Image 1 (tube, rainbow, N blue to C red):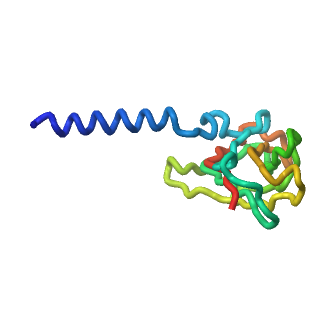
Image 2 (cartoon, one colour):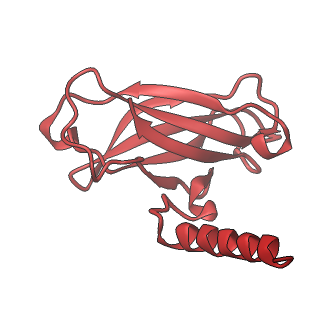
Image 3 (cartoon, rainbow, N blue to C red):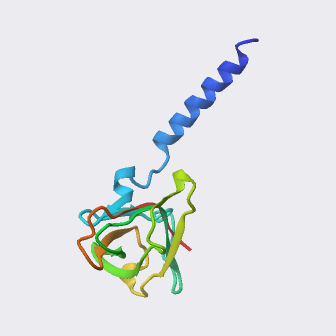
Length: 151
């Protein structure tokens, strides 16, 4: 009976590990980070189980970390994958342009974009977020996407 607590802990740890392996993962952490040189492609939460979305729906992107460039501001460009073609749906900037991270106590930032009212975009599966320098070359800038969902 004295090992009962340790057995429960081991069972819970095993169950948690199994759930992490078999649960639908959006992307690896490296794929969730966008830089000027490498865009991030993010699967939209629940997109495969969702029926076609109607007009007025929007995709909401949650940013969990940001690192500004020392050479000037950058803009994040959000594009939707519609029938194997990227279509820009909006842009945003982090203000103030200061580094933050949810893991270091910062608050996430959320940005919403209306979905295009086109047949090819009614069942979006993923978005791509890239960084575009506004001045300078954008070296060192990065954002980490926490999630993308349709609301």
